[in-house]
Length: 341
Ligand SMILES: [Zn+2]
Ligand SMILES: [Zn+2]
Image (cartoon, rainbow, N blue to C red; front, side, top):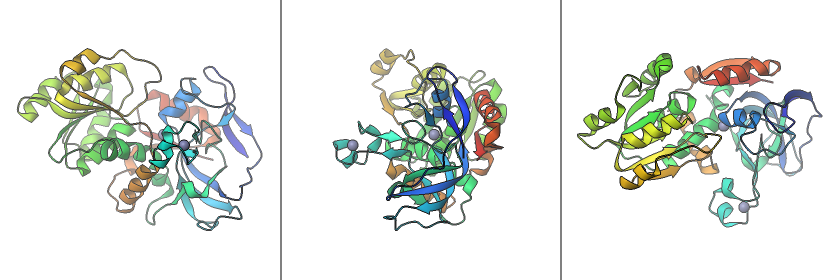
């Protein structure tokens, strides 16, 4: 089968390879991948800015159909439409695992970085890490379950927004668009910020429910937050661009004791005004990827049609055209690029 693999350390080193079709172990299912998205994390893996055990088949954002099941698997049958968690293995014994925080398990391995992922015709995963896709949810939409789950975690799990909070979302890409929608569901007033090149993306943020969408090169966001809140500033700011200037804006526009939430990876250490955060006693909250609880919550939201995902799928390429798909993702002009193995 064809699989897109990161072969060597250093930037690049990625190739579409011919590899054997994996055989599921007794507790695993084999999934024929329908769609697989390119994540910011994949871009960091390609750029050698994110740890990966090489060589590895990339991809953790996917949907597919069960094709074979190991002897011990009773929950799934061939033909079932599924997604699975990003963590493909965790020890199950340590404190983090017992608390449902498997991403913090010292032994955890994620599909697409620590073990073979879904940028391939087939992927095998442990059956107890897979979920059935609810009826009425398309395979294309289901392929967004992982990015949605990361945002579910950042908006509804690591921090609880209160109805009436003034929320600022920096970056109108896929993650910002999802965070904005979830913050609206939670009852917040939502402002999405972008730059001059984000005109179309800011317009989409408004269309998908944000109260305001502003170009930060034209609008004083700090002043806007003060005006909205009657003097103090935004209650919560989500950094959804993964760039230092955006982190800076998020911190500055918050009220004293406001909450800064980091959603996207930077891929490197960045300068950050911790002194300003200290003086304002601002809370710095980090939300990384998605745990089982985040996926479970996401599937409920998808089932109840609470999120508008259709316009967030910018383009679908055959896996063979992965180079174009990666170039489109790097251009940061659209939202999610999917590939079809
Ligand atoms: Zn992802
Ligand atoms: Zn563990």
